[in-house]
Length: 434
Image 1 (cartoon, one colour):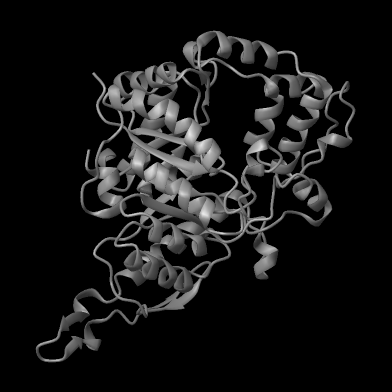
Image 2: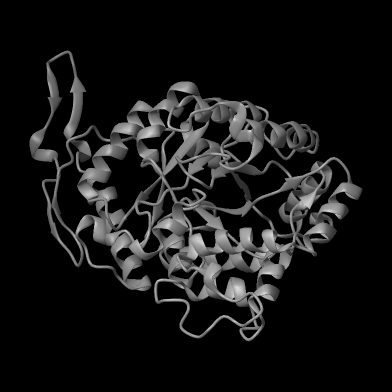
């Protein structure tokens, strides 16, 4: 029988226009203000979610695709989620918050100091979602790096953060009785000149009882290796079967074992975007309708993919294959494969039609279903794949959050899959108390 699962929320547009282009927008919220996010995160905390993760991208993208990226706010604007975090901590008491920080453009000393400050302000509820995006390099006056080199840089970066967080060692005394605050000689006044960074310690911030929780995405070999070596939470994507989930988890755990870590040292949480409906018949209707998209539906799919890949598919002939050379080097092979699959010579219309199709959670072909069917799926992964939990994905808009929680939480609680109370100890305790 499945036990409690760790459940979190990933707001996939980051600190940007939530629910843009949908009826939810007309609730009257201003996405630049904290109220919308505070209300939604309070609801997630009341539901018993472990953490909320804020997506971010520093750049609007390549100058040639700016209009494509912002035409319907797919790629921006985005404000800095690190600066939103204090507002979320002020509105909540238990839930963890993990804003995204780019290891390529944020100097390690600055990042260590900002994150240490937020960890203290939040009473240990801070996490950090570490990304290695190389497209933002020019904004920081840096040259872009190849994929694997970006992970090399991120490994040096996180190693420096951890050394800086611990650079006070036993130097902090904090004894008021004899006015003895600290021993300077015990601090780690190191200098570092590495492959990507030059910095020095110690950090000008108080030491931490625990490092902030490190979250990382990335399903490539290097991404999984980074997670195994450095992360507390791996944001995972995989096919829906228990076998695929088990295989993915095994890769992360093998990467952890290579550096002497145990599988219990990290949580692998699969990112899902459920479409919850009131009945199986309604789910079947939605799935069937998705198999016959209109040209407007296909254009919407093309726009979303174009924005994410910074490649304008809207200019191509729907009834011809994608021309060779359409995707530049900045588009990963996995992203291209997600569109073309094993049929690169198929017309673009066919490829977009496949992308538009939805599937039923009941038959493990997608995420459209009732709350009970979705709970069945979570329970199956916990029982058959020894899964740690899931991260639900979507806009962080109260209308969407309330609908999802109203349908899902009672069922998950009844099944014993979702916590009813929090323990003490902040985000780390949330993730590792079971």
